[in-house]
Length: 388
Image 1 (tube, rainbow, N blue to C red):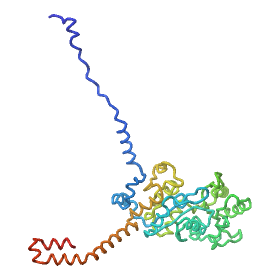
Image 2 (image 1 turned 180 degrees about the horizontal axis):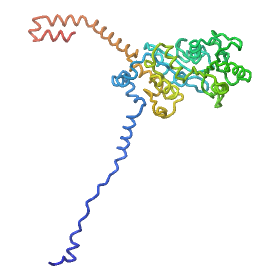
Image 3 (image 1 turned 180 degrees about the vertical axis):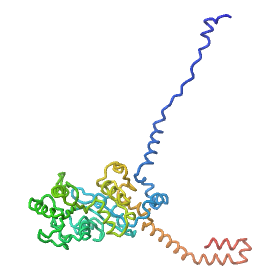
Image 4 (image 1 turned 60 degrees about the vertical axis):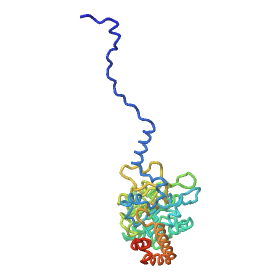
């Protein structure tokens, strides 16, 4: 057996190992498309304007009808939703005036809620009417109203009112007697009016076991400019710590406030929807009583607020109050513009029919004429069906 020569060995290349499979990275455009698709599936944001303009689109109505279709009452937060504050002036959010007028014509119950503690109800109504939101006094529910409902329920008729002179007008029907006959305290004074004498009198009342009602739970409040002032919540916590008193918060965002608001309008929470700009105040607590909620991206809203709480998800997140109302009216099938469009179309059809009555009569006689039918081979039944 002869050994292969050196030239024969190098003439044929040695066998190569099979190539290993390499994973090629997909193109950047494909990755971007996949990411966009995933975001679209998990996003709670509103649809694009092209889809949104079709407010009566059956697809949109079918999507939100299971959650919003049973709504009978719309509860709306004031500042940040209906209007925003710029340079100490109230300015309606885009399309809010038009949306509010449309909501009024829809027939759904309207309730405006706020935890403003320095303005009486009448001044709030004047501000709303000036901005273009005609509101009746019965459609406004404030901390003062909730506080009075709590006091009537527990038969507290002699409160010690630590409120401003303007807000005192909302408690005119309450009797104020000497300190030995007070049965509760209503706290809502600005920091400039709180002094040692008032706090000492409040301590003596709370030591007797009477409840402390706070019109605003916040401990600080933003004043003119960028400074912060002390709010009633801080004084309430001080009194609670000193006396172990029962602290009652008949104000937004407490759950009890929303429960009493539903009783006030006469609808269960399942038939109400809350529209607001704060994920904690306007979405989280209403969800605890099975109330639906819509978050708007105005006012206090910050980017990705809808993902702030793991177990809290609003039914809808939209750009502003205008779009929220459009979705509610579409889901409940109460849009007045849709009804007017249908009635206008029916009126046009009726007018067209009256204008062509003579034509119909002549065409009917022509269809029933035997000579004409035989000469033209026209079926009278088909002509009749065409007419009507």
